Image 1 (cartoon, rainbow, N blue to C red):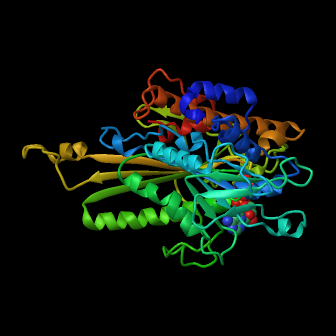
Image 2: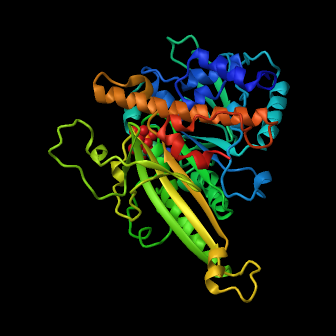
Image 3: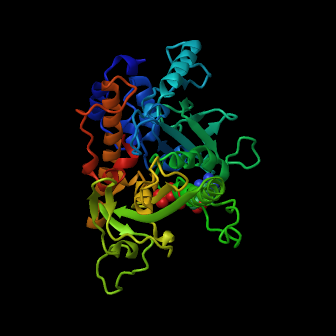
Length: 462
Ligand SMILES: Nc1ncnc2c1ncn2[C@@H]1O[C@H](COP(=O)(O)OP(=O)(O)OP(=O)(O)O)[C@@H](O)[C@H]1O
């Protein structure tokens, strides 16, 4: 288990020298065997793209602070160890004969897995993979087959590698994650629809929000892998959901989260005297600039710029609030939706801020205290949940020849790379601090290297 014996920093450096294109690649500097295997799977090549798109689909990660920090007086969040990403998955290779090519006997692998799982128990980050069905185009192409298998309700999946031209043809790769969702065949017992994916990934974050902690969920994968389908889903086909009824079957994580949050607020208010405020904002980061997705303001048609219309909205500025951290100035917070304008070349961020004020106690104030002071001293719990649909990861390598595409590729690359660096630095700092607490103060975390990480700082850090 080289991740136990090799210092984290050294492993990151080793990995960086091999070159990395994505957060998950960067975060898998575990061993030559498993790191190499995962890198192989994550690296997209044009020839393999449709198979691999289907393989990786949407990787979610969400982070919340660990239970042992719940007594901390601050409501700020923590994201200490992305152990799921560092976990050297029990990646094994099977030859066509079915014999494992791993030098480790199976029982050792099993022991390894046990120890990884116990090591990750302290983690406040999980990684989930969703396998989508082949789309119509893929079904029509004879050479495209489903190479990903999920067995039962396990958290492992297998990938049948390569074509006959590939040296690895006939090899089966095994991968293990915190959660695996199989969404290919509704007839299968382990089929995971939108509701199941929500319940396993974003659902628990509602509890987190009520506890006063920040959290963040990312959908990561290449274009067409199902990120937007998972995050937003397909628009409701009936009016029931719009009228406050249960979410439509095809509704994704964001509408389900909102529905469940308000349902929960009603339930809590029925039991406690609470004042509840919910703020919602939705914006995208395109070429390191922020554009409001709830704004009704449209670009002028006379623009000669080749930038897509949705990106011609005025760019907004980020400022730093002394208590609540970075925020976007002049964001719309009313519901006029331009959600379909979300582009695969931008990161979209749906933020929900929950403010809970307890009206039931006077916090020990004496009877001569006037009601104004009482109000000002009432305890307010504030939490922020960020649901993030990242830009398609493959743009990193295929940014085209014109200036606009190159700029897009560079900024997507920059923000995904910085996100990986931030997570690695947090994990590094935490390990340096003994593994159980927050990052050591000496650890430099490069939040400000990209707008994405700067804005999410308070949701992904301690
Ligand atoms: N689990 C799924 N079940 C059924 N259809 C799916 C699933 N996941 C994705 N799809 C379909 O696949 C297509 C591509 O999905 P989607 O647009 O969500 O990809 P994406 O990763 O967001 O791409 P981009 O990066 O370009 O935004 C859509 O037509 C979507 O409806």
